[in-house]
Length: 416
Image (cartoon, rainbow, N blue to C red; front, side, top):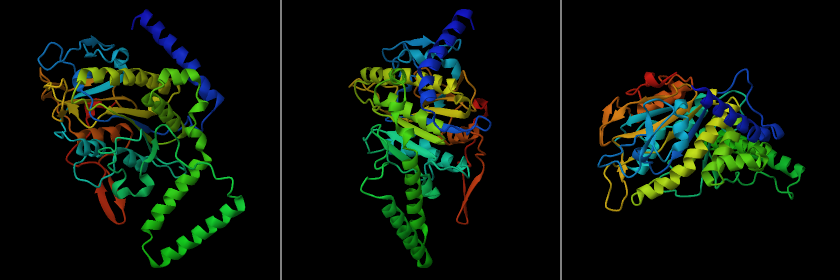
């Protein structure tokens, strides 16, 4: 690295330390102990399916390449799309897989398969699995929080926990607002709340004596989580972040949601998913990707810088993916349609090798050329990067289920 580049890096980190760090000093969260940091997962989900050709795997000058150039990155010889200029400067911190073949050109199936590593329904998605597998005995906060706007719902609400049960369902944060009813109504006096709690417990005990206790257990778990969130409602309060932090992350939904995600991770939540919508560009693909990438690109770099400056990136795996890619063929509306045969995902942080580009597609980008990767392989890889034995099994109610698809395996070349 040249001395000029080193000075620029130090300067940016110095700015972030002042701009982002001051909020944390003024309003400290209950972060994990530095002696034993929790492994954590942040999933940035590009819902609808971002075009790999306009982002991580450009094909300029070809019949499928589109109008945008590729640009050099901080990794010698590696180019990405010109719509990601900020990401290009930190490519040495990213891990990109260009050879994903899910063969699923469907939103609903793609969402589930990408997040569960399977096609068969009923398995826990990544956030729920991580919440279960990284759980600690003294955990009080939910292990999995999903942040999104209120819509669209057609293919994003696919369920979370599967057979793991209600405790590991994702707590949903919509429209950058905290969960409702975090403050007890003033009309409810403490004595009244105590009486209601005694009645609830007594009713639950009577129900369990003669009936299946599963519904009561699910309800009690939800009730207990809600009670903890009431006590810790400050973790959702973005007004405690500095004005400069808001500006750096971006005032748009995705930027503010990522800022909230950092607060939740800092508080000890094991997994946070932030959904960035509107990548499903069947028409005006190139105009639409300019808008989407402009939001995503700067926010991603700010987020990674913030996590690194706080010492969180070394134990946080950041995964960037949608449910599919886009067709190399450009349709008659100037759009790209659904494509599952050759697309890209990116990662950063805990457990993966930085500055690595894995796999490749052919000249037109319509098929994988080298090192094909399945969604099952990725699921194994994510868990392994977090220090989880992906070959293990869940043991629930006398039944065992493999944690990850036994037909797939971790991608060792990606693991640090």
